[in-house]
Length: 183
Image 1 (cartoon, rainbow, N blue to C red):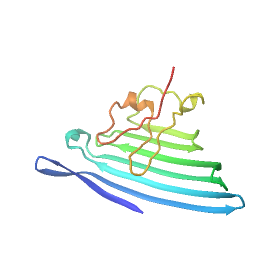
Image 2 (image 1 turned 90 degrees about the horizontal axis):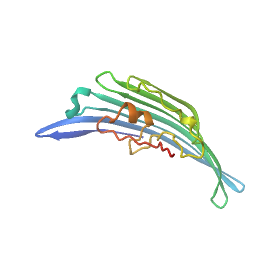
Image 3 (image 1 turned 45 degrees about the vertical axis):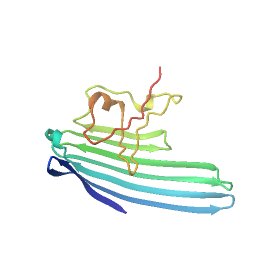
Image 4 (image 1 turned 180 degrees about the vertical axis):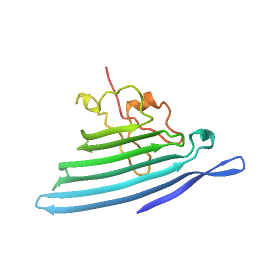
């Protein structure tokens, strides 16, 4: 299944196409009933691609954003409906490019919501300062894992470094920070 289209903005008497987008999505679910339990297995692959032009920030040129998520998991449910066990893994690649040559990429692979297999960042928009590793947080503190893409709402990986290195997200993009710290 794929959704695609564009957004048009009117300024004065001029209409401008400012956003072309595409959301291909594949979802597979299956269930296997065995004595006293049901095992549900799912796989989701979706992608959000868009190119945007912002008339009031024309110095950035065309902004391209692409995020792809591939997630799989299983859940074992007891006869009475409560969860017995479950596991999952999600891989997400996020890319941002602007017309000034700025770019940022983050490649994340997370297993069972808390185990970070890979979290690599690169690009010209990375700050010069070094940030604290996500795995350095004690388990008693709220999880600082990045938000992962969800259809219908543009959520993209986020970290403290964006607060320091890129104080304002590109116009039209809403960052979701899930990093918290307590003293």
